[in-house]
Structure formats: structure tokens, C-alpha cells
Image 1 (tube, rainbow, N blue to C red):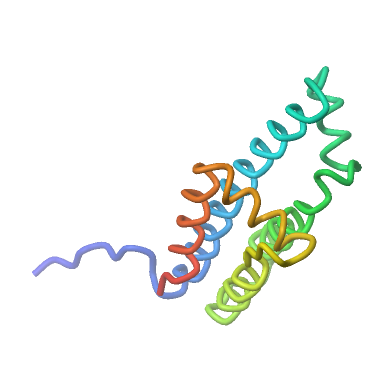
Image 2: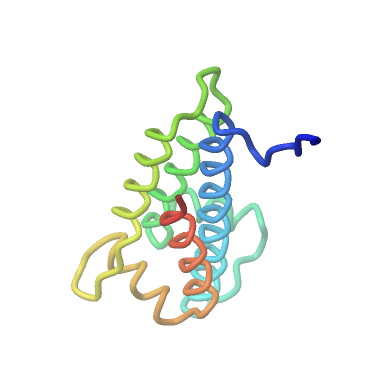
Length: 139
């Protein structure tokens, strides 16, 4: 009887889970940036260059609500790049942080309100959100 190679070993599974969650959040983040850029340009006119867009993304209040999502990805990157192994407990913490952040509310303020508006106007945001939700609930 021959042994079959395992899919990710139990020790590697938390890392894979975190990488999958991170990628889904990164995809959502990109979709939100694209959606916000379109809304910004509809309001203020075309952004003249990628450099100008990057400056707006970093410092313009229009895009400020996206910063918590950016920061979450950065922290995930730090954990993935760190010397300590990724634990199931750490993945669970990230899932909780993600769930707490990705709350949409018509009556909310800041991220909650802006996220609600993005979900209402952009089907791609809904699809990206669904992928993150799938990764948050993965076991």
C-alpha cells in the first residue's frame, strides 16, 4: 500500500487559510478602490494620472474610509512574513477582525456607511464580499 501525499499538512493549514483570506480581502480592496475611483471621477471629473490617483488614495478624505481595510492586509502580510508559524488561533482572530470590519449599515458612519453604499452601487463589490465571507466561514 502506497501512501498518498497529503494536501497541506495540519501545520501548514492555518497559513494556507490566512493566505486565502488575505487574497480575498485584497481582491475586495481592489474592487472597492475601482468603485470609489469611478464614483470620484463621476463627481469631480477624470483623474489626470496614476500618480495623482495614488496621492488621492492616500490622502483624500473621499478614500479615507478604505484605510482600515488596507491596514488589515498589512497586518496579515506581517504575520505571513514573520518567523513565527501561523496558528489556527491567529487565523480565527483575523476572521473576527474581518467580520467586525465588513459590516455595512445604511444608518452607520465611516466605513459601515461607505461600505453599504459601495455594496448598493457595484455588483462586483457584492461578489468580492461573498468571496471574503466564504473565506471567513471556512473551517
